[in-house]
Image (cartoon, rainbow, N blue to C red; front, top):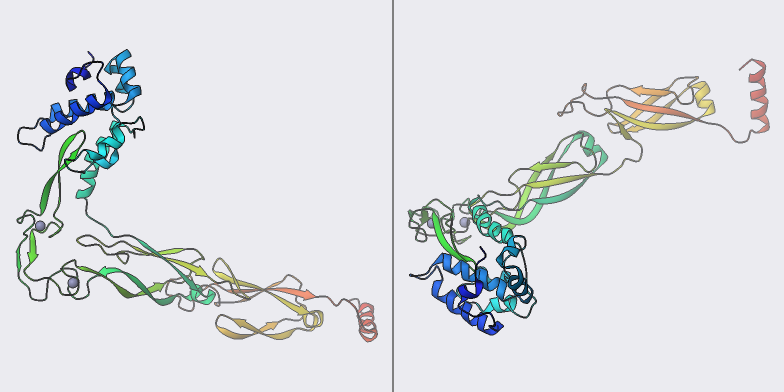
Length: 367
Ligand SMILES: [Zn+2]
Ligand SMILES: [Zn+2]
Protein backbone atom coordinates (compact mmCIF):
# COMPACT_ATOMS: atom_id res chain seq x y z
CA UNK A 1 0.00 0.00 0.00
CA UNK A 2 2.94 2.25 -0.37
CA UNK A 3 2.40 5.56 -2.11
CA UNK A 4 4.07 6.18 -5.39
CA UNK A 5 6.07 9.30 -4.69
CA UNK A 6 7.34 9.48 -8.26
CA UNK A 7 3.78 9.47 -9.52
CA UNK A 8 2.74 12.11 -6.99
CA UNK A 9 5.47 14.44 -8.20
CA UNK A 10 4.91 13.44 -11.83
CA UNK A 11 8.51 12.41 -12.47
CA UNK A 12 9.96 9.09 -13.51
CA UNK A 13 12.23 6.86 -11.47
CA UNK A 14 15.38 8.13 -13.09
CA UNK A 15 14.57 11.78 -12.39
CA UNK A 16 17.48 13.92 -11.21
CA UNK A 17 17.46 15.96 -8.01
CA UNK A 18 16.84 19.06 -10.09
CA UNK A 19 13.87 17.52 -11.86
CA UNK A 20 12.38 16.52 -8.53
CA UNK A 21 12.87 19.98 -7.15
CA UNK A 22 11.28 21.63 -10.16
CA UNK A 23 8.35 19.24 -10.10
CA UNK A 24 7.80 19.85 -6.42
CA UNK A 25 7.94 23.64 -6.69
CA UNK A 26 5.42 23.56 -9.49
CA UNK A 27 3.05 21.40 -7.46
CA UNK A 28 3.58 23.43 -4.34
CA UNK A 29 2.57 26.61 -6.13
CA UNK A 30 -0.37 24.90 -7.71
CA UNK A 31 -1.81 23.31 -4.59
CA UNK A 32 -0.78 25.71 -1.91
CA UNK A 33 -3.74 25.95 0.49
CA UNK A 34 -3.49 29.73 0.64
CA UNK A 35 -4.53 29.93 -2.95
CA UNK A 36 -8.18 30.08 -3.89
CA UNK A 37 -8.11 26.75 -5.68
CA UNK A 38 -5.40 25.29 -3.48
CA UNK A 39 -5.63 21.74 -2.21
CA UNK A 40 -4.19 21.04 1.23
CA UNK A 41 -4.19 17.26 0.79
CA UNK A 42 -2.34 17.38 -2.49
CA UNK A 43 0.04 19.95 -1.08
CA UNK A 44 0.82 17.68 1.86
CA UNK A 45 1.21 14.69 -0.40
CA UNK A 46 3.67 16.56 -2.59
CA UNK A 47 5.59 17.64 0.49
CA UNK A 48 5.79 14.11 1.74
CA UNK A 49 6.98 12.81 -1.62
CA UNK A 50 9.52 15.59 -1.94
CA UNK A 51 10.78 15.06 1.60
CA UNK A 52 11.73 11.52 0.67
CA UNK A 53 12.87 11.84 -2.93
CA UNK A 54 15.00 14.91 -2.31
CA UNK A 55 17.05 13.01 0.23
CA UNK A 56 19.52 10.61 -1.32
CA UNK A 57 19.39 8.11 1.51
CA UNK A 58 15.65 8.18 1.87
CA UNK A 59 15.18 7.90 -1.83
CA UNK A 60 17.37 4.82 -1.89
CA UNK A 61 15.44 3.27 0.98
CA UNK A 62 12.17 4.16 -0.67
CA UNK A 63 13.29 2.58 -3.92
CA UNK A 64 14.12 -0.60 -2.00
CA UNK A 65 11.36 -0.83 0.62
CA UNK A 66 8.60 1.52 -0.45
CA UNK A 67 7.08 4.28 1.68
CA UNK A 68 6.49 2.07 4.73
CA UNK A 69 10.00 2.74 6.00
CA UNK A 70 9.21 6.24 7.08
CA UNK A 71 6.85 5.35 9.88
CA UNK A 72 9.61 5.75 12.35
CA UNK A 73 11.69 8.66 11.28
CA UNK A 74 10.40 11.93 9.94
CA UNK A 75 9.28 11.94 6.36
CA UNK A 76 11.18 14.89 5.17
CA UNK A 77 14.24 16.98 5.43
CA UNK A 78 12.63 20.26 6.28
CA UNK A 79 14.41 23.42 7.03
CA UNK A 80 13.04 25.06 10.15
CA UNK A 81 13.59 28.44 8.54
CA UNK A 82 10.73 27.72 6.22
CA UNK A 83 8.03 27.90 8.80
CA UNK A 84 6.21 31.15 8.69
CA UNK A 85 8.38 32.20 5.81
CA UNK A 86 5.50 32.96 3.47
CA UNK A 87 5.16 31.68 -0.01
CA UNK A 88 8.81 31.57 -0.75
CA UNK A 89 10.67 28.38 -1.01
CA UNK A 90 14.14 29.74 -1.25
CA UNK A 91 14.87 28.63 2.30
CA UNK A 92 13.76 25.18 1.42
CA UNK A 93 16.64 24.59 -0.88
CA UNK A 94 19.09 24.81 1.93
CA UNK A 95 17.48 21.88 3.63
CA UNK A 96 16.23 20.01 0.65
CA UNK A 97 19.38 19.43 -1.32
CA UNK A 98 23.00 18.64 -0.89
CA UNK A 99 22.42 15.79 1.53
CA UNK A 100 22.81 17.98 4.60
CA UNK A 101 19.19 17.88 5.54
CA UNK A 102 17.91 19.12 8.83
CA UNK A 103 15.76 16.32 10.11
CA UNK A 104 13.25 16.34 12.82
CA UNK A 105 10.33 14.27 13.85
CA UNK A 106 6.96 15.04 12.36
CA UNK A 107 5.55 14.89 15.86
CA UNK A 108 7.71 17.87 16.73
CA UNK A 109 6.54 19.79 13.73
CA UNK A 110 2.89 19.25 14.53
CA UNK A 111 3.51 19.90 18.18
CA UNK A 112 5.07 23.17 17.24
CA UNK A 113 2.20 24.23 15.06
CA UNK A 114 -0.74 23.20 17.12
CA UNK A 115 0.84 23.47 20.51
CA UNK A 116 2.36 26.79 19.57
CA UNK A 117 -1.00 28.13 18.50
CA UNK A 118 -2.52 26.98 21.74
CA UNK A 119 0.18 28.54 23.88
CA UNK A 120 -0.25 31.85 22.21
CA UNK A 121 -3.81 32.01 23.47
CA UNK A 122 -2.81 31.77 27.09
CA UNK A 123 -2.62 34.98 28.97
CA UNK A 124 0.75 36.63 28.72
CA UNK A 125 2.86 36.93 31.82
CA UNK A 126 5.90 39.09 32.50
CA UNK A 127 9.20 37.62 33.61
CA UNK A 128 10.05 36.93 37.20
CA UNK A 129 12.87 38.92 38.74
CA UNK A 130 15.21 37.71 41.45
CA UNK A 131 17.03 40.16 43.70
CA UNK A 132 19.62 39.47 46.39
CA UNK A 133 19.18 41.52 49.54
CA UNK A 134 21.86 41.41 52.26
CA UNK A 135 20.63 42.01 55.78
CA UNK A 136 22.31 42.05 59.15
CA UNK A 137 21.88 39.32 61.73
CA UNK A 138 19.83 41.67 63.90
CA UNK A 139 17.55 42.47 60.97
CA UNK A 140 16.99 38.77 60.36
CA UNK A 141 15.97 38.35 64.01
CA UNK A 142 13.61 41.30 64.27
CA UNK A 143 12.59 41.77 60.64
CA UNK A 144 13.25 44.88 58.58
CA UNK A 145 11.72 46.97 55.85
CA UNK A 146 13.85 47.66 52.79
CA UNK A 147 13.28 49.87 49.82
CA UNK A 148 14.85 48.53 46.68
CA UNK A 149 15.03 50.33 43.38
CA UNK A 150 14.58 48.23 40.29
CA UNK A 151 14.86 49.34 36.70
CA UNK A 152 12.15 47.19 35.21
CA UNK A 153 9.16 47.18 32.97
CA UNK A 154 6.31 48.38 35.13
CA UNK A 155 2.69 49.21 34.63
CA UNK A 156 2.60 52.74 33.18
CA UNK A 157 2.27 55.24 35.99
CA UNK A 158 0.40 57.72 33.80
CA UNK A 159 -2.43 55.51 32.53
CA UNK A 160 -2.23 52.68 35.12
CA UNK A 161 -1.85 50.20 32.28
CA UNK A 162 -4.93 51.16 30.25
CA UNK A 163 -2.83 52.69 27.46
CA UNK A 164 -5.42 55.47 27.13
CA UNK A 165 -4.89 59.18 27.46
CA UNK A 166 -6.67 60.55 30.49
CA UNK A 167 -10.34 61.05 29.72
CA UNK A 168 -10.05 59.44 26.29
CA UNK A 169 -13.14 57.67 24.98
CA UNK A 170 -12.97 54.06 23.90
CA UNK A 171 -13.73 52.91 20.38
CA UNK A 172 -13.96 49.57 18.63
CA UNK A 173 -10.51 48.07 18.08
CA UNK A 174 -9.39 48.63 14.51
CA UNK A 175 -7.30 45.47 14.39
CA UNK A 176 -9.91 42.89 15.37
CA UNK A 177 -13.09 44.91 14.75
CA UNK A 178 -14.11 44.38 18.35
CA UNK A 179 -13.78 40.60 18.33
CA UNK A 180 -10.79 40.60 20.63
CA UNK A 181 -9.22 37.83 18.60
CA UNK A 182 -7.48 37.63 15.29
CA UNK A 183 -7.12 34.59 13.06
CA UNK A 184 -4.12 34.04 10.95
CA UNK A 185 -3.04 31.38 8.54
CA UNK A 186 0.38 29.99 9.24
CA UNK A 187 2.03 28.58 6.18
CA UNK A 188 4.46 25.78 6.30
CA UNK A 189 6.02 23.25 4.09
CA UNK A 190 3.49 20.67 5.20
CA UNK A 191 0.44 22.83 4.75
CA UNK A 192 -1.33 25.80 6.26
CA UNK A 193 -2.92 26.07 9.65
CA UNK A 194 -5.33 28.62 10.89
CA UNK A 195 -4.57 29.85 14.36
CA UNK A 196 -6.57 32.23 16.50
CA UNK A 197 -4.92 34.43 19.00
CA UNK A 198 -5.73 37.31 21.26
CA UNK A 199 -5.61 40.66 19.48
CA UNK A 200 -2.33 42.47 20.12
CA UNK A 201 -3.90 45.90 19.88
CA UNK A 202 -6.70 45.55 22.42
CA UNK A 203 -5.43 42.45 24.26
CA UNK A 204 -8.81 40.81 23.90
CA UNK A 205 -11.07 43.60 25.10
CA UNK A 206 -12.20 44.53 21.59
CA UNK A 207 -11.83 48.21 22.45
CA UNK A 208 -9.05 50.71 22.07
CA UNK A 209 -8.77 54.30 23.26
CA UNK A 210 -9.42 57.13 20.82
CA UNK A 211 -6.28 58.78 22.11
CA UNK A 212 -3.27 56.89 23.42
CA UNK A 213 -1.40 57.57 26.62
CA UNK A 214 1.38 60.06 25.82
CA UNK A 215 3.84 58.32 28.14
CA UNK A 216 3.64 54.68 27.06
CA UNK A 217 2.11 55.28 23.59
CA UNK A 218 -0.70 52.89 24.40
CA UNK A 219 1.40 49.95 25.56
CA UNK A 220 0.29 50.33 29.18
CA UNK A 221 3.80 49.56 30.33
CA UNK A 222 7.00 51.52 30.61
CA UNK A 223 10.56 50.78 31.63
CA UNK A 224 11.43 52.88 34.61
CA UNK A 225 13.06 52.87 37.99
CA UNK A 226 10.59 51.70 40.54
CA UNK A 227 10.92 51.81 44.30
CA UNK A 228 9.62 48.71 45.96
CA UNK A 229 9.13 48.47 49.70
CA UNK A 230 9.88 45.00 50.97
CA UNK A 231 8.91 43.86 54.44
CA UNK A 232 11.37 41.19 55.47
CA UNK A 233 9.76 39.31 58.33
CA UNK A 234 11.63 38.24 61.43
CA UNK A 235 13.13 34.79 61.58
CA UNK A 236 14.30 34.36 57.98
CA UNK A 237 17.32 32.16 57.46
CA UNK A 238 20.20 32.92 55.11
CA UNK A 239 19.21 32.05 51.54
CA UNK A 240 15.46 32.09 52.13
CA UNK A 241 13.24 33.77 49.57
CA UNK A 242 10.25 36.04 49.74
CA UNK A 243 7.95 36.19 46.76
CA UNK A 244 6.20 39.42 45.91
CA UNK A 245 3.43 38.40 43.56
CA UNK A 246 3.08 40.74 40.61
CA UNK A 247 6.16 42.81 41.38
CA UNK A 248 8.21 41.34 38.52
CA UNK A 249 8.33 42.57 34.93
CA UNK A 250 5.06 43.89 33.58
CA UNK A 251 3.86 42.86 30.14
CA UNK A 252 1.49 44.59 27.78
CA UNK A 253 -1.98 43.12 28.16
CA UNK A 254 -0.97 40.42 30.62
CA UNK A 255 -0.12 39.84 34.23
CA UNK A 256 3.17 40.90 35.74
CA UNK A 257 5.73 38.33 36.83
CA UNK A 258 6.78 37.89 40.43
CA UNK A 259 9.67 39.39 42.34
CA UNK A 260 11.78 37.04 44.40
CA UNK A 261 13.82 38.53 47.22
CA UNK A 262 16.64 36.27 48.26
CA UNK A 263 17.81 37.20 51.72
CA UNK A 264 21.47 36.96 52.66
CA UNK A 265 21.96 37.08 56.41
CA UNK A 266 25.38 38.22 57.59
CA UNK A 267 26.68 36.22 60.49
CA UNK A 268 27.04 37.91 63.89
CA UNK A 269 30.35 38.30 65.65
CA UNK A 270 28.97 36.97 68.94
CA UNK A 271 25.58 35.34 68.55
CA UNK A 272 24.16 32.52 66.51
CA UNK A 273 20.69 31.09 66.33
CA UNK A 274 19.74 27.92 68.13
CA UNK A 275 16.06 27.45 67.37
CA UNK A 276 14.31 30.33 69.08
CA UNK A 277 17.26 30.94 71.34
CA UNK A 278 20.35 33.00 70.69
CA UNK A 279 23.52 31.31 71.76
CA UNK A 280 27.07 32.37 72.46
CA UNK A 281 30.17 31.21 74.32
CA UNK A 282 31.78 33.30 77.03
CA UNK A 283 35.29 32.75 78.31
CA UNK A 284 35.94 33.82 81.91
CA UNK A 285 38.95 33.67 84.19
CA UNK A 286 39.29 30.93 86.77
CA UNK A 287 39.14 33.47 89.58
CA UNK A 288 35.88 34.92 88.17
CA UNK A 289 34.48 31.41 88.02
CA UNK A 290 35.42 30.80 91.63
CA UNK A 291 34.40 34.17 93.03
CA UNK A 292 31.60 35.14 90.65
CA UNK A 293 31.45 38.43 88.74
CA UNK A 294 29.32 40.78 86.71
CA UNK A 295 30.08 40.74 82.99
CA UNK A 296 28.89 43.34 80.48
CA UNK A 297 27.47 41.38 77.57
CA UNK A 298 26.61 42.84 74.19
CA UNK A 299 23.20 41.52 73.17
CA UNK A 300 20.89 42.35 70.29
CA UNK A 301 18.96 44.45 72.81
CA UNK A 302 22.01 46.43 73.83
CA UNK A 303 24.45 45.89 76.70
CA UNK A 304 23.25 43.73 79.56
CA UNK A 305 24.98 43.04 82.88
CA UNK A 306 25.31 39.27 83.11
CA UNK A 307 25.65 38.03 86.66
CA UNK A 308 28.06 35.11 86.74
CA UNK A 309 27.48 33.23 89.99
CA UNK A 310 30.44 32.12 92.11
CA UNK A 311 31.44 28.56 91.46
CA UNK A 312 30.08 28.49 87.91
CA UNK A 313 31.13 25.31 86.11
CA UNK A 314 32.98 25.00 82.81
CA UNK A 315 30.33 24.33 80.17
CA UNK A 316 27.49 25.61 82.31
CA UNK A 317 24.80 27.47 80.35
CA UNK A 318 23.49 30.74 81.74
CA UNK A 319 20.11 31.91 80.49
CA UNK A 320 18.74 35.40 79.95
CA UNK A 321 15.03 35.02 79.49
CA UNK A 322 13.24 36.73 76.64
CA UNK A 323 16.30 38.01 74.78
CA UNK A 324 16.26 35.41 72.03
CA UNK A 325 14.49 35.11 68.68
CA UNK A 326 10.88 36.25 68.42
CA UNK A 327 8.56 33.28 68.28
CA UNK A 328 5.71 35.34 66.89
CA UNK A 329 5.99 37.26 63.64
CA UNK A 330 5.34 40.52 65.41
CA UNK A 331 8.27 39.90 67.73
CA UNK A 332 6.78 41.48 70.77
CA UNK A 333 8.68 41.04 73.99
CA UNK A 334 7.44 38.08 75.95
CA UNK A 335 7.17 36.03 72.80
CA UNK A 336 10.84 35.47 72.39
CA UNK A 337 13.26 32.69 73.08
CA UNK A 338 16.16 33.11 75.50
CA UNK A 339 19.78 34.13 75.24
CA UNK A 340 21.99 31.20 76.22
CA UNK A 341 25.56 31.79 77.35
CA UNK A 342 27.87 28.81 77.61
CA UNK A 343 30.67 29.46 80.12
CA UNK A 344 34.22 28.54 79.25
CA UNK A 345 36.72 28.80 82.09
CA UNK A 346 40.17 29.81 80.93
CA UNK A 347 42.80 27.93 82.91
CA UNK A 348 46.05 29.77 83.67
CA UNK A 349 48.96 28.28 81.73
CA UNK A 350 51.57 29.23 84.27
CA UNK A 351 51.19 30.24 87.93
CA UNK A 352 53.28 32.91 89.61
CA UNK A 353 54.91 32.03 92.91
CA UNK A 354 52.22 33.92 94.84
CA UNK A 355 49.44 32.31 92.87
CA UNK A 356 50.93 28.87 93.45
CA UNK A 357 51.09 29.55 97.16
CA UNK A 358 47.47 30.67 97.19
CA UNK A 359 46.30 27.60 95.29
CA UNK A 360 48.28 25.40 97.66
CA UNK A 361 46.38 27.08 100.51
CA UNK A 362 43.14 26.21 98.69
CA UNK A 363 44.32 22.65 98.40
CA UNK A 364 44.81 22.44 102.14
CA UNK A 365 41.20 23.56 102.50
CA UNK A 366 40.12 20.65 100.34
CA UNK A 367 39.17 22.80 97.32
ZN1 LIG B 1 0.54 54.90 29.76
ZN1 LIG C 1 -8.39 44.19 19.02
